[in-house]
Length: 341
Image (cartoon, rainbow, N blue to C red; front, side, top):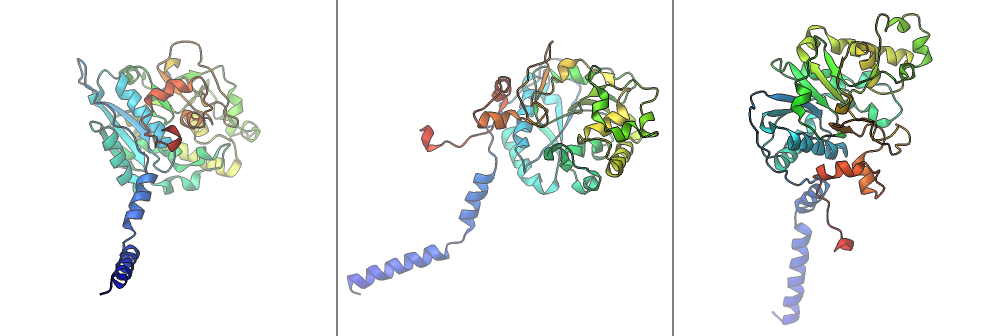
């Protein structure tokens, strides 16, 4: 074969091979780039006198940036716990994300004790009313209502934690609080204007306005709660919360996501927990997300409730001063940029 024909044949073969190459490589590379990457956390070992298992529930949303916040929250709990190996995490998530979530958790926390639970969005989607922020309308935001149904009946007490907080104290101190026979314990804020959490339609309705009769209701944030699951199950509190969500669909008695049903059912009957266990509101208000300072007093938990999230503000190079307290717990592995080299 003449050299020029050989060269042409070789080029044609190469083109054919390139054309026939399966697209799996391209797909795999896109998927890998699309998958959040987190650095591996160090192994945390128990101190002395570790006999009690502490149960913590959180939601994991693989399809949103909140996963980054959840990972930071888990790291903060483990880093400050006296008995991290005795801490068991119950993660509520959508079943289609289980595979990716399992890989992410096991690669980031190889020694973590955890279980994934399927939260079916259809459980609650038909009960959700629009609120002041779209993020508050996501079904996973309501998963905490179903903890008693989803977790094993052998789990009688749970600490529920939101995905936008970090713990800077031993979580066992929160676990060991005495609920004094109550179903739920949380920091209360009785100076807040409680009427603001419900519309005039609620307060002027003869039946609704009697809801808090013989109770002294105070605001509490549902991002940090200690719950007696056995009492919850025995008294059917999931159904009670769903009832108020149905009322909301018909009468529009509040504007703020999953919080008001909890206030309607529990406010005035909450075991008061020290305020240091929920320094909330660090994300600012639900519309502007402006920077805020800490409340006076000691701090065991910082909570970026509100519109502004620390990972978004840090990435945008417009952080609030307190976002620097969240940054050391961020395990997100940023891709290196050519401009950084």
